[in-house]
Image (tube, rainbow, N blue to C red):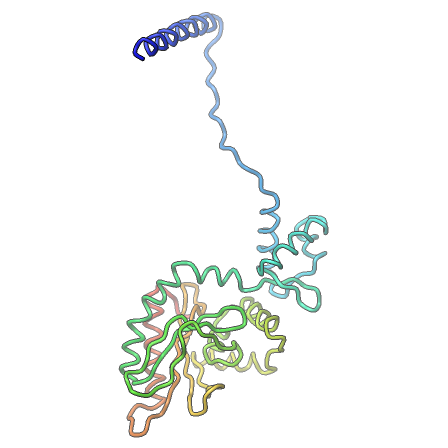
Length: 289
């Protein structure tokens, strides 16, 4: 093995000498050229780029665009765009309205929620929610938007023998739940349109005619109070939790029940809930909308 290695090394030295001699002769007549550094290879992914172009374009168009409008905006042929639209629609990233316009769904928003920041939101919210439940003797829950529904990510029971609770992971209709209206009210106009469109596409229903007036009223007071659409005697009070852009990322809600003999009224719950929602917003680095 050593003899073989020695011969291999000798062969390398002979090759090095020959290479050095050749370089010496070449350098006698010309200066040695500096070889340019190889450029980092960039792999072209035209199909992916087309799909991303479509998503980015629709993100700037809350009213949506038709197939031909998308092709014109992106300077592509309709046949090129058609395949992208079929793929994105089948994967749930876009939806086609009745007027043949394509709009973004909330799937991208859902993907963001599945990112670790959602876990951070729940982790930061739970201690505040426990204090809220003990101070008001009421249960509370934290909800976020998913499609046309509100999904409850966190739940804290009331420290009493009786109470009204929601099941962790359960959902409520966006247009029925107090938390849904709070989340809608505290969005940008463009995002609010997308959320309503997603709800309509999922339920097949039209939004209430007085929706904008109602949402404006919620923004003015910064909370929603409405009777439960599921249980008589329960009044849902909901406040927004804001992200760093001032948009509602979640809704903190108390399904209020007036217990016989209890000194805690709905006004007390509203005050405590306002403070709790603001505290969660602060702990996650959010900004008041």
